[in-house]
Image 1 (cartoon, protein in one colour):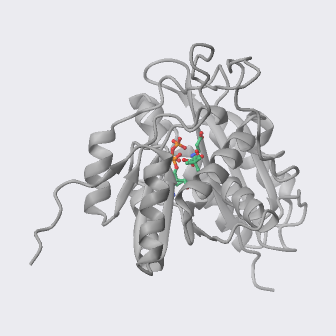
Image 2 (cartoon, rainbow, N blue to C red; image 1 turned 90 degrees about the horizontal axis):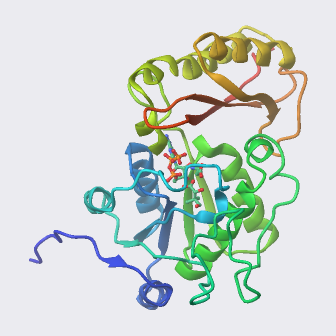
Length: 313
Ligand SMILES: Nc1ncnc2c1ncn2[C@@H]1O[C@H](COP(=O)(O)OP(=O)(O)OP(=O)(O)O)[C@@H](O)[C@H]1O
Ligand SMILES: CC(C)(CO)[C@@H](O)C(=O)[O-]
Ligand code: BAL
């Protein structure tokens, strides 16, 4: 009997990754794919498990994608721990990890290599092709991070071309991202099934997120106002509340009262993300983003959401 592997194979170039996937396909295997930015937690592992249930082999990628960050965001301090990530992925039954150094065209000697929005190379041969999901990318996280979904859709399209998966798994913590990718795949005919998995939470209710590691101790306690306000909203709508504006104001007030700085609290159609006013008319996405002080510098921006089900008539 073959001894179980003690390390996970790490692929670092596009060519190696594509060759691995094509070799699997030749053997008749289906490929599941979990794109991540690393610093993995149980939320990511739930996506790997979901991919394993749906495909014969599973690829996870770890790549902190510069084009979805602006120059004043946390690209440089984004938490990283590739050794721990590889151990967790091996344990979770992932087949290989794709850890490219850069996925953007580097012009030798002319490029700073960052591609962070606002500090890209101005070289005429630099990367300049982007995917935009024109309307779905605008509200919510796209409002406060206008560069964000352009970067996400572009890197996910590139990763799909390199990994060539049959199924790709995303978390519904990043609800709008899941909708944007689902729309991109439909509109651009990627032959890939997109799966959205529920939010994994800490025991006290906080949505798991790599960025939680940057919260100060005080913020870690205070930010529980977010999941508590989300739960309160679920109960209110269960009791028959219908006024979207009033519900959003109260959720925001609860987060601000705990010391958070609200970025947005919005109620939108769960599928196409258009604003809604009557919560009794359809399942409605309640999406929240708020800043709490970080332990190093600045703030940590946390997101959470739920789909509110109207009370039975
Ligand atoms: N708590 C969670 N439950 C389910 N899926 C999650 C959770 N957190 C992240 N994911 C999913 O994992 C994938 C990779 O996300 P990413 O690596 O950015 O992790 P993250 O914890 O969301 O990081 P960040 O703190 O930057 O938002 C995405 O599809 C994301 O939605
Ligand atoms: C999908 C993704 C890996 C693209 O960089 C990222 O946005 C994330 O981790 O959610
Ligand atoms: N999980 C979303 C990645 C980002 O906020 O950049």
